[in-house]
Amino acid sequence: MNEIIGVVCIWAGSLFMLLAAVGAVRLPDIYMRLHATTKAATAGIGLIIVAVMLFNHRMDILARSVGVLFFVALTAPISAHLISRAAYYSGVKKWKRTFIDELGEYYDKRDQMPKDDDDSGVAR
Image (cartoon, helix red, strand yellow):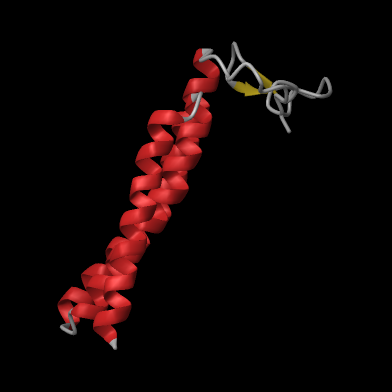
């Protein structure tokens, strides 16, 4: 039974990784590409690592697999956020059909800092 679940996890993880690759190539701007690759690739890696955990019952492999899952789940969203923020402040063009800029009213692009609302000098 573990083998069947493991094979299904490998196939599903591979499909998610394929979707991440297609999203990285086909989506129109960096922000959508990062979103697609972060979500789909993290899910794909997670499913493949779960399959590794199902196939191997040694404690050292299980511990490493849990470590890899934790590391990927922790670092993927943070790195995508930092890359998106750097692209936003660098002036990378958004897709022509993107109309909402939620950061524009909160951040000063020149200083890369939050805008002050009052004269106290304390940022929000």
